Amino acid sequence: MKKTSKTFYKNLMLGAEFDKYLIEHPKFAESIPGGALVVLLPQDDAALCKENLRIAKARAEEGQPVVYITIKKLAPAPRSRIIGPQIEYAKTG
Image (tube, rainbow, N blue to C red; front, side):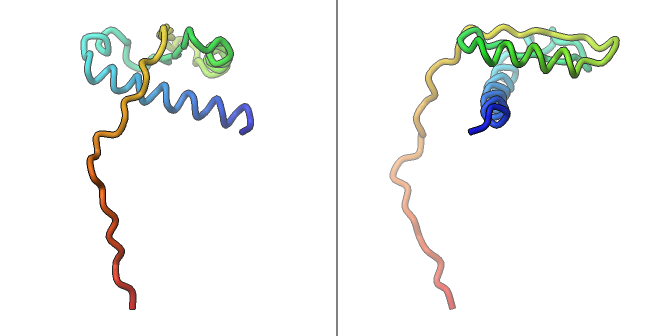
């Protein structure tokens, strides 16, 4: 996987987790100014943290609030809650 693809994937997953956090903690979300550039800084991934800072510096617009969100780490992902799935194939023809 190319570096850009890997960075994109990591940020996609981190962003999805952050969205879940904001839904569960609306007061935290209210502390982020409207129109802000939110920069996620995972402390357990120095390379991604550095890359996100670089991207933010390049993308921040003049006068735009920039908010750095330091993330200590992610909890292990839970397993699927699906029990006993079954596959049924549609008849063709």
